Length: 259
Image (cartoon, rainbow, N blue to C red; front, side):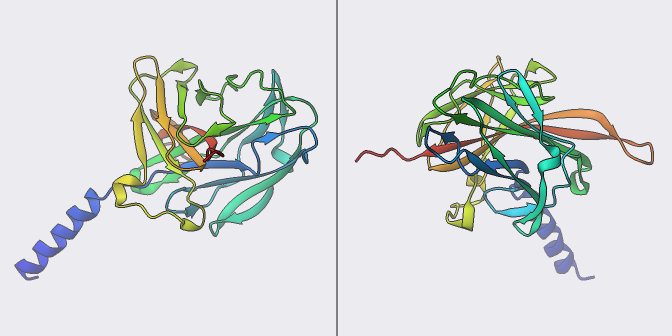
């Protein structure tokens, strides 16, 4: 092989490795986040796994757990899931009827996703909040997931530009100085990023595990705090592999209605 060809291939390899990686996100989006008296109490929810901004999907196997928490009460909704396609990949959908005032926390725990390119598993514990019939008590309540973001800003009724704050926990303890990746649900790819660095926004938690972010655009925004655990999952051949546990929270922002 000629020296010039070798140099060219080497440069291509370096460039490909240097590209900004796209963030994985567990996704759970209801068709509305607030239901008032007189509104249709029926929610439609989708569950998926993808790169939200690029709108590149990945298959989501049926979750290990899917449920809803209202106050201290939890209900198992796993058997309500119906398989569907989102971004041309395996995903899930369901309907749920809100029956009483309260803050409904929907969450799912996925089956571990093997990412061969990174030699690790990805497990994103994903949740979102829906407020019903004027009640907002308990909007900062946690579910008790292995990896979880507890909102410190009320996670509904948010205007574009509001600063959203959250507390990251892993195994029940606050996580200081951890990266929180933030991406916009870029439906129909209506937004084009100036370059790849703009696709995934990144903030760090402070020494108390708290982060903040101001959303510049109306719509759904996903927050994913990444926690690595060594030798977390044992493969069928007995080998132990690292796992990335994402604490994922989806929050919707709405444009200011005034002029």
